[in-house]
Image (tube, rainbow, N blue to C red):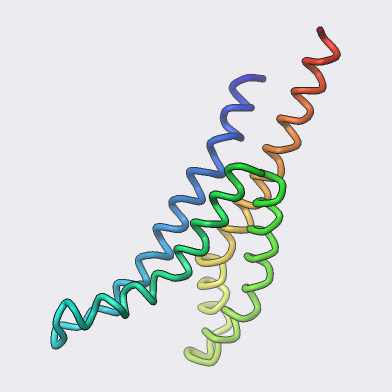
Length: 133
């Protein structure tokens, strides 16, 4: 049971860090070869705002798994229709838009569910240990 507990403790954290790094890659499109670094840096930082927000939510989830997991799940599910519509307006392809939604929001839904699951597994393990003693 200890190995499962450790797996469910670290898996959502590792997946969330990887998903935030993936989202951060989209900020690289703010760089332009015709502008100086001083002109490009503010645009780069603005493009990183979603990553900063997700990082703050990760800190909340790290401390309070249930709350953070709930936030990640609601955020992923709530942004899915918006991301779908934005992509569908650009490419007019249902399948391509669904693929983008799966790449961007689905990892955060999975992370949220894993954080909530980790919370309940730890709670169950604590109750089991209290009864055994």
